[in-house]
Length: 82
Length: 231
Length: 120
Image (cartoon, rainbow over all chains, first blue to last red; front, side):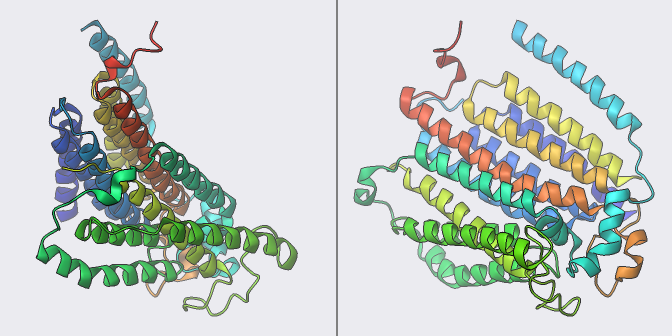
């Protein structure tokens, strides 16, 4: 029963974070939301009995790729931020 | 506006298509033929407790070799496009805070040890070369954040990467002569199931993959860090 | 409740959101974010297809002996594929972002509509 509630909450959060990442005009918020999608997905993989995939997604999807996005954002920070 | 309408029509079409696929999807109750072969024979043929590792390194070893090659190619092309600035060493950056520097000094060695642990134990527990390499690269990110002016020796990463790739292919070719085929893991005796020194050459290959992925990702992150302009 | 079906449906929705982002956004960084969300959806679908109800992770230890692996583990093949696909995804994302940096150096703009050299 508890796992069903967690899965429903994860589903809602993943979809909300994905829509926010695509629709927001603030690039920092968009990058953080994309990282959040990966983090929620990695929790979901644990429920799908895939611990290896969960570890990879948590380390790479929400860790390293967010860092690379921020390096690029800092590099191209200029007049247009829309 | 016309453009958005076209996109919406496309998405509705795709959604209808996906609905059909999701509607006809029903989880099966038993493993399919390939998976049941791996589940039945994986333990005695490969000797790895983690079946995902057995598939990644031995049964689909050629796939993994190709994957590591793709990662190398993307890192190389990205480095080609990110020519680092000449004035990199002359920029003046605010030093990062005392807290971050102290914490990084304590945590970075521990993170590196965790990464090594993850890829050494890849055949027994969840984890392996890819995860361990990513953990090592994230430790390097912490180091770069705490010391922004640190010059990282990218030749070292290139050396580690090239030699681990070379040994990976060398072990694969050795499998043709000493065992059943390319990347066969029974070059070394399989050992006792479930112990650290088991599964033949598989742990060695996964350690090499870990070193290669770790140094590739570290080199990539260093390249991105070197393009930072001054603020 | 079948977690596998939930993962497949969420994965398809993530793919649709990603395509919407790729096709409608003007900012290049947002387009790259759309690609990365597309990627996550694809991985969720593949893991969801490999899931079998009521079974455990494909790791043989004291809880799952090699003898009864056939009836108690989920399908390990999609997990192995997704494992490598995630790492390639990072490489491709980094490559696209390197192009973004290069394009920005070239014309100092992140708006995709200001790059129309090949437009007819």
